[in-house]
Each structure stands twice: as C-alpha cells, then as structure tokens.
View 1 (cartoon, rainbow over the protein chains, first blue to last red):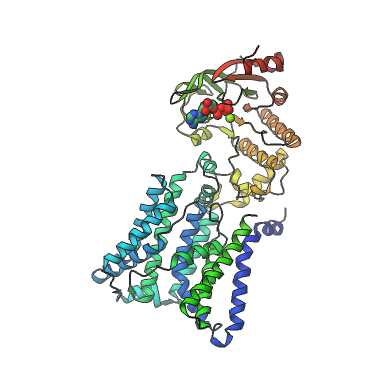
View 2 (view 1 turned 60 degrees about the horizontal axis):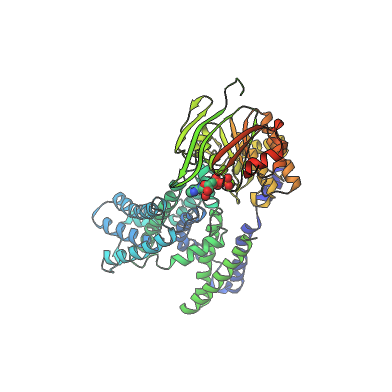
Length: 317
Length: 246
Ligand SMILES: Nc1ncnc2c1ncn2[C@@H]1O[C@H](COP(=O)(O)OP(=O)(O)O)[C@@H](O)[C@H]1O
Ligand SMILES: [Mg+2]
C-alpha cells in the first residue's frame, strides 16, 4: 500500500463536492461581478470577517452532528452570550465580561447536554425548546434594547483589531478551525465522537462513554456559540437580541454542504469552513448583484437546497 | 474435566428479566484452546448467556470465575479489560470509519508529546493482523461499509483476536454469510483456538458445530439440557436434545 494510493482513498468523492461547489460559485461571482469589486482584497477579506462567527459555530455543530446529535439553539445562545458580555462589560473589566459571555454559552450548552445525555431526551426536541426559551430570555434581558460595547480592548480582540497585520476575526477563524480540525481528526475524543454517531452500541460495547460524549458535544456547541456571540458584539461594538437570529439555516447548510452527515458518524471541519465561506460568498455576491433582500433570500434558499441535495445524494451512495 | 484451571467457570447461573426466566441453573467450564458450541432454538437464551459472560447483563444469581477468580463485571468494558472479547451477532462495527479505527475502537493508540492519535501505527498493526489472519481486504484504511459481510465479520474476529487474552465469545458469526465466507470465518475461529484462547460459539448450523467444536452445550428454553463431547455424539442426539423430541 503506497502512501499516495491511501491518500487517494481517503479523499472520498463527497469531500470534493464542497471544493467544486466553492470553486464554481467563486468563479461565477469573480466573472460576473468583476466590475462590482467582488475580487478586491477588501471585499474578500470582508467575506471572511463576516463569516467568522458562523465558522466558529459550525465547528461546534460538526462535532454535534458527528456524534448523532443536533443543536438548534446556538442562534439564541449567540444573543444571550453577546448580551451577557455587553452588560457585564459595562461595569466589570475585560476578563470578567469575556468569561461571563463564554460562560453563558457553555452553561446553556451543558444544560442541553445534561438533558440529552443523562435524561435521554432527543437533542432535536431539547434544543428546539431551548432555542425558543433562550430567544425569549435574550429579548427580556435588556427589554429588546441594544447594548453598546465600549471596551476598546474587547472590540479589538473580538472585532476590529489585528495582530501582525492579520485581522483578529481572521485569526479567530484560523485558530478555531485548526484546533477543531486537529481535535476532530487526531484525538481520541474526536474518534469517540464519530464512533458514537456512527454506531452508538458499538461505541458503548467498545468502552466509549457514550453519554459523556453526547454531553461534551452539546456543551461544545454552547461554547462555540458563546464565542460567536463575543465575535459579533466585538465587530458590531454592540449586542442585541437579534444577533445570531438568522444563523441557524446558514450554519446547518454550510456544515452539511461541507460533508458532515446529518445522521452522524462522519464530518469535516475544513469542509464546514468552506461551507461557511461559500455561504458568505453567496450573501456578498447577491448583494453586489443588487438583488432585493427578498430575492436574495429566495436565491440563497434555492442554492442551499441544491447544494444540500447534491451533498446528501453523494453521502447515501 | 481437565486438571488445568478453566479459563471460565460458570456455576449455577440464573437470569430473569422481570418475570421471564431467560437462563436457569447454567454451569459450564471453558478451557484454553477449547471450542465449545452453544446450540438451541431461537429464544433458548444463548445470546443472553453471552451477554452475561461479557458483562452486558448481570446474572440474577450464580458465580462467574475467570481464571479461578470470582468476577463481577460492572459493564462490558470491564470484561474486555479482563481479556474477554465478543463478536456480536449484529456486528459492533462503526460503518463509516476505516478498518484500523474499528480495530482500535475505544482503545486508540496515541503518541507523545501531545497525545494525538498514532494513525500510522494503528494502520500498520491492523495491516499486519489482517495479513497474518489472511482476512482479504483492500487495505487497513478501507471504510467498513465498502466491505462484504465476510470481510466485516473477518474484521470483527480480527479485533477479537487482537485484544482477547483469555476468551472469545462468538454469537452466530456466520449467520449472514455465504458458503465461501463462512469457510473463511471458520478458519479464523480455528486460528483462535491455535492461540490457546477459549472459545464459546453460538451457531445454528449443526454442520458447522460438528466441524469446529470440541464440546457441544445444548440449551432449551433457558434450561441446560446437557453437554456432549463432539467426538462422542452425533447430529441426531443433538437435534433431539435441542427439540426435546426423542
Ligand atoms: N433485555 C431483555 N429483556 C427481556 N427479555 C429478554 C431480554 N433479552 C432476552 N430476553 C428474553 O430471554 C429469552 C432468551 O433470549 P435470547 O438470549 O436472545 O435467545 P437466543 O439468543 O437463544 O435466541 C427470550 O425469551 C427473550 O425474549
Ligand atoms: Mg441470539
């Protein structure tokens, strides 16, 4: 068995769907929107910056789906954690605000996780309920008001700042993707996550602590949504209950298009990144094309439908 | 009975699920390098017995001795740590994962300094193992679901071989296989015997039972009807023991 042959085998077709789709849409916009500035460094960077929170959330979701679970509540978690951070930052220093925002996300994730892993409730229903619950809590937290974030260090780290000339949101994306990828592909935890989603009984009799894995992936989803909340409030320099509201469909679609199976056992962090960038490109391109918001939604919905259909077709082979 | 210590000694095992008695008063010794076949009709309690030995179920009463030590397994992974491996009727393989990850499922190898998975070593050891057992698969990196039923069962048995130090339990390992694949699996079972492991195999095929086993143990509706040396019995006797019709 030569190294190149085994490499070829591991690069299964499914994964290439996202690469091809990504390339196709990129080329399409590059040609049709050339005069509208699609290809400018500024515009392309913007796409990455706007995608950063979605990418971070997508990483959590890849783990959850791979373990055979789902999280529908992450959009609401974004709002709660962003508002928590913003409110706390009004009277406390940076670290406290960050910990409070992240902590809120982790706590909600752990709450989902306990109900799913130890009370054996289906994650679809649990997170459907907590999605509504925490959307409501986000609204009532500040009576629908937007809370400004005036802490410059915070908005620098989680928003407009940069390190060695690299925008901080790009750095967050890179760091999150690398850590996510390595944990997913190269640790025992990652292996246990996919095994749990693939065949829970096999995982169980092989000594994998299945409930612990389920708890962990849902908590991780809370954590990544919490971080996404910080990134939103850092970039927008404000927090509002609407943050994360529209991310549910985009992130799930991005992850599925990126080669993660809806029913567990299989996923890709790099695929999810590309899926998110693809969704970002789509948003950006449709705006540059000058479509009305309603038309954007329709076109985006249709493209997502096609993309998901193509990637799922391939999975069921 | 041989004088050497049995690998496994079951004494007066009893198991009830609520009001349903699945096993009543079962006793059996298993010796190293011995294949014992467990036969009986559907619902006789064969699978239940295997699950009791492998720690999935706790017996309602009775004693399990492993190499002379009384054992109480909290769960299946504890039994595995003690050197008991099971090849399940419905394969306990993760379909979307490569062969080597299945072989090391729950016992993945890692390497310093970061404790990351040592995939190269798992792949290599898997390849060596399947080569040694002559399980013909495209490669250690093949995905399970791309393999045939026989190849999958081969992997399940290879996994048991790799990890078992004492005892291998097989629950109808050839139930879903064709003729050639069955022959291959039987070969694998015999190779386990050569490694001096004790083997308890459930099978519905009396031909197979007579080909493989040293002794045959018959269960009927949870009752232990008897144990025969394979060399000293014939199909007629076993059939009448299974059915209760003389
Ligand atoms: N988990 C369980 N709960 C209740 N009854 C069970 C359970 N497992 C097995 N049984 C019962 O125990 C008996 C023996 O089943 P089983 O061991 O699967 O038989 P076999 O493998 O010989 O076909 C059957 O009557 C079955 O219904
Ligand atoms: Mg059975």
